[in-house]
Length: 423
Image (cartoon, rainbow, N blue to C red; front, side, top):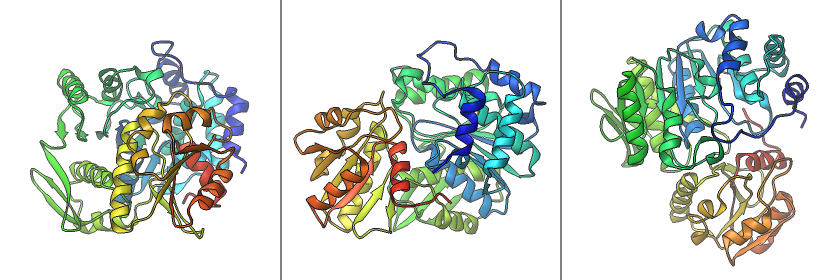
């Protein structure tokens, strides 16, 4: 599948390169310079809900967009990463941007003459498009950080949202939770309310300190609001409202927390949000590769983009719940990008698995299958490709539940292999 946007980015900005080590040349100055040359479009777009965190960002953004649309709003969105095509990152009033329109905006960014990374160019182009297309709301997802993320040129967001923070991208953000939390908390702005998911104490303390320093009101999960499953439904409670809703269409207990976070954020920004709109959004929400079942094959196959220890724990819990309802042997197919921690990822998942098959990821810098299988233990084996891994899984046990996980890049490869689309 040809990605015209990626090809044009390479032509205009050079081949993409790996994240820089911590402390080396991270700066928002190039991004600000390019935007200034474009007339600072980021300052004229619709109200922004700015989302940072380690896990659950994509799902939370999907819930926010669904809630806004269910409330009758025109919603722009910038999210990352994409599964199949770069243009998946930009939605204009609900619809995916076309290659042609995205490329035209990227070319305008390139014409500023400012040297940018691919992600910076994409964000700048998104702001150009958002400024030129009428909307009521922008859902804006950070990249891997917050403080020095290209999206953090938004000076006055309507509100900020912080999903759970955990160790990830340690080569760029720092190798301890406090350092990573400082990056994520960097999106907080004076006077802008921040809706914050439940956090480890270290991360919570960092967020609270930053909020107090700049004067950002915090609404904390467990203190100011809660979300929980009760009687087969989702209950979301704030200091002033109680939502009694159907459970979200997406699988897993972690989606209860993500949905609750999004509902509290949307209700805080838009107090007129109704239960009816919330119920419609929860039924309609879609987020590819979040424990998505493949319905086009004869075996039970699931695809999930979990790629770090926190995500693996959520996936393991979701698979445990699934197995309690419909028991099946579990076979994991795992591929991971380099700079990830395979042992930490696999630890919550391997106890419930009958077999683990390690695979490379096509066209991505990844951990060698031999290293993955070594981390997985005695029940692991290696395959030369995802297609071979699937064939082996099917041969091992015809009744097995097959789960492809470890990387959103691998999830994208699985979507291509099965002929699935996004949107």
